[in-house]
Length: 361
Image (cartoon, rainbow, N blue to C red):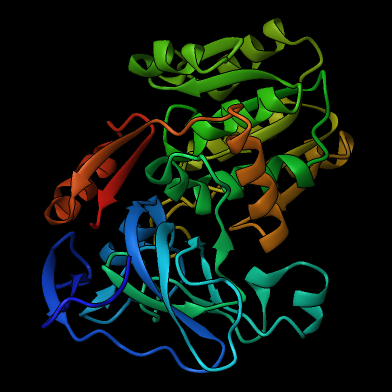
């Protein structure tokens, strides 16, 4: 693919009225990559719940994005032009665009593999142009090489959802034989977390609404829990302990729910790990309830609590390598660019199995 079309323009999806789900498609000029940059013809972009939160102004304590923001941070495209000094990735190669659009690679955080905490971080789709567009200029260093033979549309969500859950399991030291409980297991993050856990040799308790039970079990979940069937936190915790006496080693909280976080420590075995991924809507804003942990139980059981918003460049590569072996498959709905607002509304209602992917071709 090459940028040869006369009068070619960049069709991009913008957040037209931040604070709502309203979006619009606009035509923009195609830019030229500068030093250290490449121009990518975008093919696909997954839609993450963080994109919804950025558009609607519900992303925790983060400031609202400006009108005209191009969202998206999990995209796949083809390199069509290199900026000065760039030799890799080569023209014609497929690359992925992640949460970290640009990092310095030299600060203390970057040097320890924490690029998503880079002191000079620019975030795709948040005060920086994201993946909901046909042509994107990005840092050559941050563009992730895509393995041959992988489904490109399915690989798009791996740039955020897949990398994040893989990194979560890795940093929680998940090993063969461990039990992992996943909240929001039928969603974009959760359905990949089930598969990555199984690829690591773990066992899964999937928790979500009842309509997603068959989907989760098809993906390999050993048990399924419909959280709506339990009236109190104590009841659902007791049920988990009947399935796995003593508790699970890891709870991966993909659901952005206060209640899920209130319950999570109770599911864990002593010295187990709670991985916080999903962020409750309006979390931390005045007048809103925040997750309540039983601190005495956390101390008594010596629990670990970690937060993860994205993975490193190395973790993204490892995540893709596992998928390329056929051990993980993204379940997605491919939709045209003009369906972003509709997709946001469906995500708001919690009725999406797997991931929605936009076709940017």
